Length: 160
Image 1 (cartoon, rainbow, N blue to C red):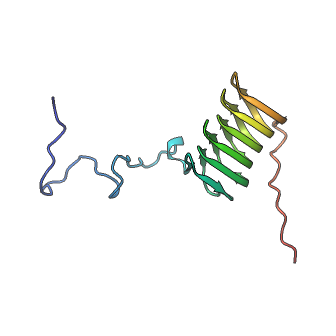
Image 2 (tube, rainbow, N blue to C red):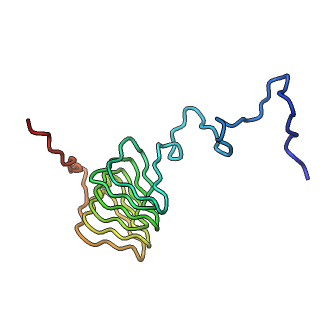
Image 3 (tube, one colour):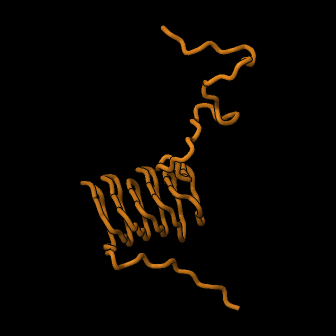
């Protein structure tokens, strides 16, 4: 059996081309290549199983819900609600994939996908819709057309 390279006991005298971790404690996390901006590099917020989050999320490009999120308004590029996830509230995204429970208003300016384990209660606005066998939708459905824009977020300026 071949081994990679023996671990040096002291710092090498010549520069090494072997990859090094980005930071202490970041073992196993690959360094991000410069100049690429694919989905894996988006600013992602993961709400894990057993975690509950209430409030507003800003500056997340991708939101992954495996636990529970309750929010009045979230704007992101992508939303993924895992089979264990629950989202209650309102969200505006480019693309949404629901494999768990979504209760509220989802506006997907691109595509809305309801997986076989997914259930959407409330209002769903979308440009493209895909529902797998077993996926459920209860409430109001509204297709966005080229001329229609997603409604602006409801905001009441403070009086005074």
